[in-house]
Length: 532
Image 1 (tube, rainbow, N blue to C red):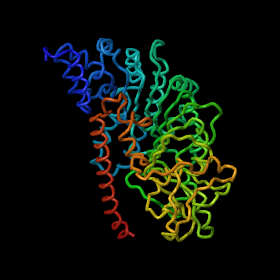
Image 2 (cartoon, rainbow, N blue to C red; image 1 turned 135 degrees about the vertical axis):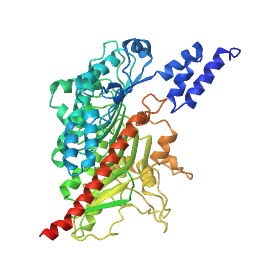
Image 3 (cartoon, helix red, strand yellow; image 1 turned 30 degrees about the vertical axis):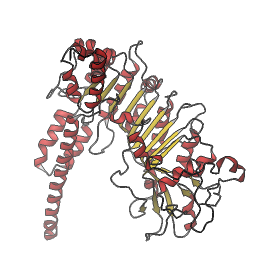
Image 4 (cartoon, rainbow, N blue to C red; image 1 turned 45 degrees about the vertical axis):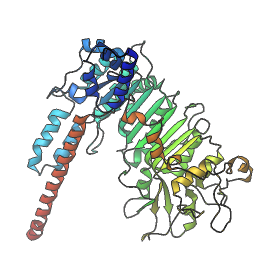
């Protein structure tokens, strides 16, 4: 190795960094080989600092917090911070589980362990401990520009989750109070954001000031959200969510993920009826899209991704309209358009469609998404979608399947999927004729809009799946909206094995407890009948 030119050694080590993706510990060991290895690998190996539960927990401390000396030595190399508090439990959640499993004595040790080890208190760690340690790390990392915060992942939803609210509030405070000579925060990832936590923070003026300061220079924002308050608070959460996002006036990319939506399996049409939920409850499950932003807010938002969400047509169109002047890239994955169907007025089902009907002008109350993108002159250079579908609410007492096809059938007879045709229409590709030779054209609402809204690009003969599929495109290209979810520094994945194992253990114990509880209830049922 000593005989190789230094430039060649550096190139080899840079490729070694790529080869060690997912094995940061292996890269850290290579630093000890020699001084040159240390100098070349240090900017990569020390790019991200991590603050996790095991560094704060006093009950069974497995890792010590970084010392003042260590942070002074490595802090200047840190450009990203990964905060993982997903295993933290809340007293309300533990009391809820304790009450639920009161008839199952074997669950007592599990409940006791949750309360003793994973709740924020003097035995484990306090709110002040978290704030002090986070502030300490930020003080010694002046070049930090990216933060990922994993908030507590709830097993059950008994009400306000105070632990998550305290962690979120203290995180914003620490970010807002960084030293003046620190680099501005440009990338922020918020995982498991609770609607209740955000609404509660917004009631405190100081918390709002901290959010404004922390968001002032943001360019990239990723939010995955959970909603626990029900339809009564959906409007309040929508206002607070978009008020918070609007504080990032320099924002260039935004990704929103709804953690309440079912991501296990996608359907072209999924149905609900009055037997499963009320119309109001069904509507409350839609992700809170923006209704109207003040002028000159988010003027630089060029890239938008919406994933795993149910949306109302009116709200979704309002969001697209709000960003139409700046939006250049749109990604949709696992998004369902909510529609209402009744056999008494079946024609109304075509009011809300992803693409629209060919050779028909939509009326003023139609919500045809792809056609609307052309009407508002959206200048999209990239449009990719995957797993689009319809979430239908049936008003009939006895709903019948197979009544509605929406625009799922390819009118050109080429068996193209909904997603491919959506991208083609939204980006202005001329459509192939129908099997009988008649033209297939998607018209805007008014004839005066034809000059810019009609398709004006010839359709390529070799359209590849990555030309329209969001999943394929983002996995093979630079991801401008959600890459930071997996890797906050772009080199190593955000992975905490302790968190994964602990959450799996929580879920397994809760599942076993429910199994035992159901057995107890089943065994008591015959006894009650015999007593009667």
